[in-house]
Length: 149
Image (tube, rainbow, N blue to C red; front, side):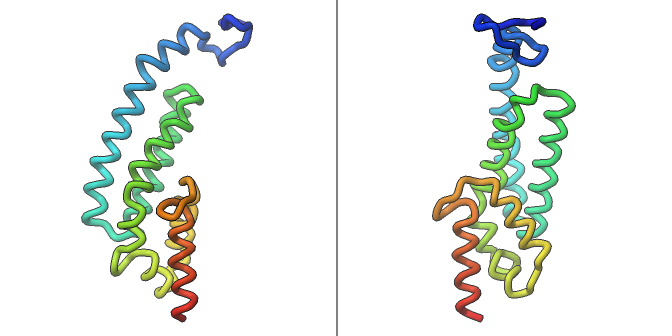
């Protein structure tokens, strides 16, 4: 290996010493700045955008981050970066998005907006599942919709 670690393993072509610097000096600051950026941006979107508009923006931002990692960062950063983005863009606003009066999950079901419902499923599938997060709250709304119909 070009840059062996103490245990004799190779970490890409960066090397252990450089990789530690990357983690400490760049990645940590990048994750924090990304989290703060998306907290501000999502707070702005949630107040003005419909649920489908918000989801399209979130989907676009998540893809931009994947592309940014591929172009500029070490591949090990992707999972951590996406987790920060998902938390700020999706998890922190899920309840508000689902409950938006005219455009939330219930409205999408009523109006049979299948593309928007697919996008919702795809996005919230990324989150850990609990009673307030991920697909479980959506499935509860779908159950209620079925009973009401």
